Length: 116
Length: 112
Image (tube, rainbow over all chains, first blue to last red; front, side):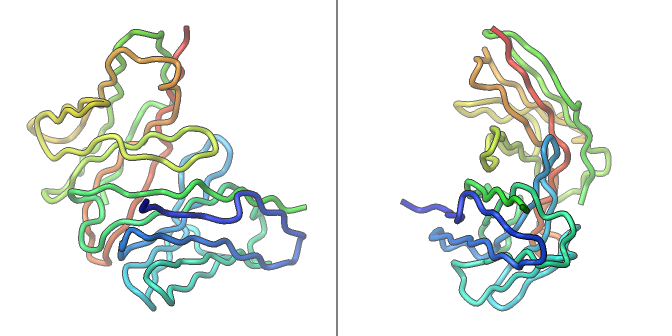
């Protein structure tokens, strides 16, 4: 079955460490996105990518980095520069050239990151 | 991208029809209106999308007036399992490419 997979589901990080969250999709979608969600809040866009080897900053990119070496993979690294990384992280994908037009976004099940 | 305004929360009872309205006064000609549903600790899932007038699927209906400055998501005969956050998104491919920008959503609580 086609879908989008995030791993791990739960992740614990010590202060000062970098951690990488995985996002893989087999939907043949060109565009992928990373969001952060804090308790009781909406989703905030961190980074997005339309094509391989290209990505753009979203609203809250500071302290995060991404790469897009393969179409199906869009990993997110939470760096030590991110001062308050504890949150729920969601990855999504859509076909290129459509965005919200005539299609839907598919989301992973999320990764809950906790700083200990 | 057009900014959206939704009520922060709504309460309803099982079996009732629920209407959630979203305001998007600066919607552009090419913009579509899309609604997503999110349960706790899960990713949002697509509910319905429309451009104008009325769209209906097996889950919901979407009403869009002629000026398209607002839209209403209608959930018929809600059940406890419809308790979730509902997001209204408005937009299309912008000059920089694809973006999905979510607002705060409407938290729907369905009571027995």
